[in-house]
Length: 187
Image (cartoon, rainbow, N blue to C red; front, side):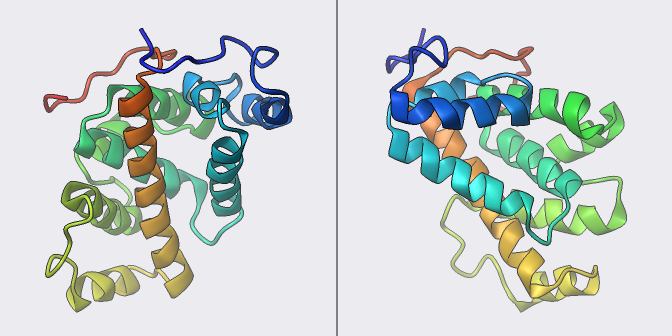
């Protein structure tokens, strides 16, 4: 049961959130409970979706962004986020089960994406305490894999945005509205 009240439908959300929820429905094929939870604050929903949408048009490809989302959700141990992103990876992005498993392990079967996913998983694992944990070698490895400065910044933002979603779901505890995928580590 949700810890914070969550509108059940777009029509029950604040008026200022309804158009944003309709756009969310188009993006995900439905309105995830995470978006409905955020809709209680139209400003929060707008900010979250603005960054998500901006990153959609960024330098980092969608498949790698989704791989990062899976790695972060598993690393942090968030059942809601892992369920949502596994569903999206399979049904909207087209990642296969072997790739999803690799992503949940903080890796990728794609050699270039592997470098980004491992880096993002390290960021998520550190949860902000990265002093001395991220160095020139990490950035050098990303650059050697072909990532430019814009992509590196976006990898960090994707890791951060997915970490933020984890915090939101832990505070609000929305019902999991995708096939349940439990993280391997205890939540």
